[in-house]
Amino acid sequence: MDRSRFCSISVLGFLSICLAVDSATADAQESQRYVDTRGQLKHARNLFDAGKPVAAMDAVNDVIEHHPSLAEAYATRGSLRQYANNHEEAVDDLSKAISQGMSRCEIYVTRAISKTELGDFSGAIADCSTAIELTSDSSFAYAIRGSSRLRQKAYKRAIDDLDMAIMLDVKCEIAYLCRAVCRLNEGDIVGAAEDFRKHQSLKAKSLGHDGYRAYDGQPFTTK
Image (tube, rainbow, N blue to C red; front, side):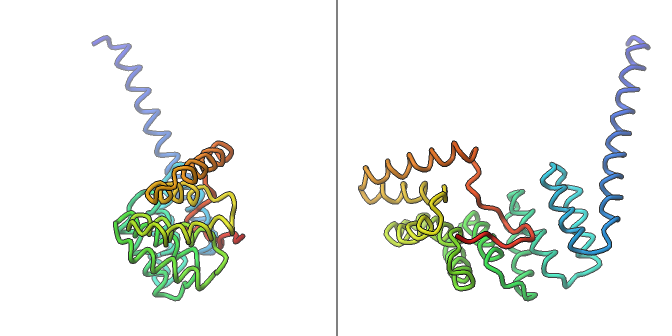
């Protein structure tokens, strides 16, 4: 192999390693700047949004290590694990947050989504029902409960929930999509087509983001 080319590759490889180490060190140092736990948890969510899931989890784990009874830390880690499709671990963390007194609508809805992904539709419906008891005007709670009932093929009950979700938030994409599927299975071809067109229109305007977010330290905006 040509020595000059080998040296060039070696230098590039060395520089890449140095840059990676510098980046990881910077993330770690940034986390250490936060003396308050909420600041560090917010920093962890920002790291995750910036495409740095390992650094984000390290930041949250550091909080949990020093504050093992902090419900918000488990709620944050649970939501990050859900985003990463680690649903079993997400349910475990969110359950810990709830058991430690964090009884909030968005925690239950976030756990319901992971339960739905795991096929626990009854558990998801129960979580959404609790969320609705806590915050009666949460469109997301109705939408996720409706989607779980859709998965159970309980189409009429699902439509009731999805109707309520849309009444509370006319821009709730997932509700239109799920209701379209329900109506199709109920033989309402016209209604299904109308809902699907509405879903596609909202999706185009929102660039595919239906407004739902897992727990991120702030309560859902209710409508």
